[in-house]
Amino acid sequence: MAYNYDINEGKYPGEPGYKEWTGFEEQFKIPGTTSKYYKPIHPLTFHSQLLKNHLLLHSKKGETYTDYKIRCNAELEKNNKFFQPKGWNFDKLLYNYDLLFHIKQQDNKVNERLIKALKEHLKTIYETYKVNIKDRAYQPKELHEMTI
Image 1 (cartoon, rainbow, N blue to C red):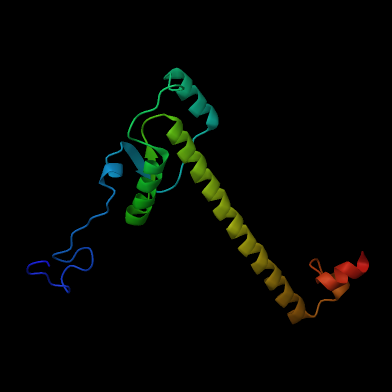
Image 2: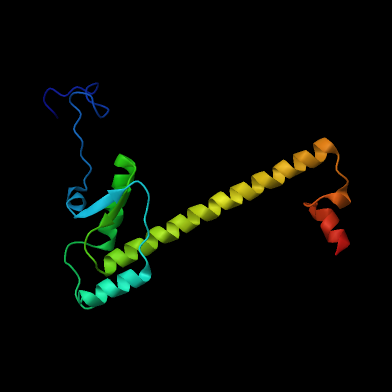
């Protein structure tokens, strides 16, 4: 049992008695930069850095791909910024490819929502202005199947 513990004190950041503990103190010690937007690194830049620094056979102990992801997620939640590790190694390469994959996935989701909204908008315009079915750019599936 905690001595003099008040459950109503320090529930939220900024309140007296609130202690911030993330559990990721080791990941926050990783040197690197943060930015508002993700700036992808070109694969040729990676290749030249790995060859120039002779990092093809060596990897830095203690910092891994998952540590970079944990730090990035924590930075995004806390400061709304992306994390970019300072050192050049394979883990940084994997981390950046993972970020590119997730950004592309988000882009696909946005595109699907935009296309769906556009189709609904065209449908309401056609119904509002009573456009003839044969003159429509976007036709219902039934009519499209009948013409094929």
